[in-house]
Length: 171
Image 1 (cartoon, helix red, strand yellow):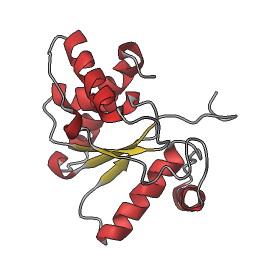
Image 2 (cartoon, rainbow, N blue to C red; image 1 turned 180 degrees about the horizontal axis):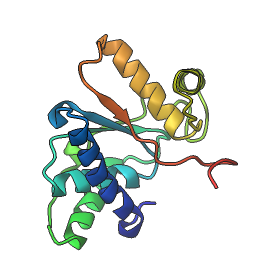
Image 3 (cartoon, rainbow, N blue to C red; image 1 turned 180 degrees about the vertical axis):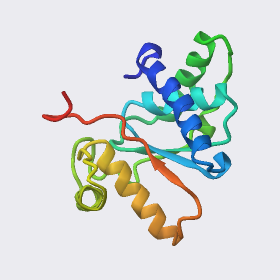
Image 4 (cartoon, one colour; image 1 turned 45 degrees about the vertical axis):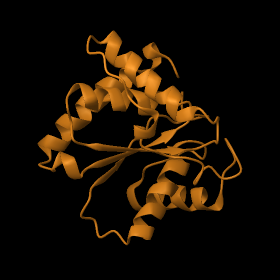
């Protein structure tokens, strides 16, 4: 959720991801962590966590629902609140919130697009990883599109963050 308490797990997740990237021998400054942005809690937690460990990993949040206009300011404030609670105050500026707004949200929150359906099928068939149509499916559709637009050759590792699975399997 969009509270300090609700985001603390993603601060820890940032630390774990940084350790895993190092263990794999990847150059952290070339890694982009992509996540769905619903209420902004996941992104705020990851922003705070990476800041607290001075990680050069990059973040990219993909807005999945066209939720509100002050979204980046709200995420920046929450990330700052997290840092303060953890003893290292820091002010994040809304313009530095790494988010793609609305591009992949489709008609709105919880409305699946054809691109989302294709992304869900693609990852399930190729890797056996299930995505949901509301959060992770839209984020992965955005990631696939960004790779296609940039004609990516795999030189920059993109790590999709699978933060949840709502619905019958998300017990």
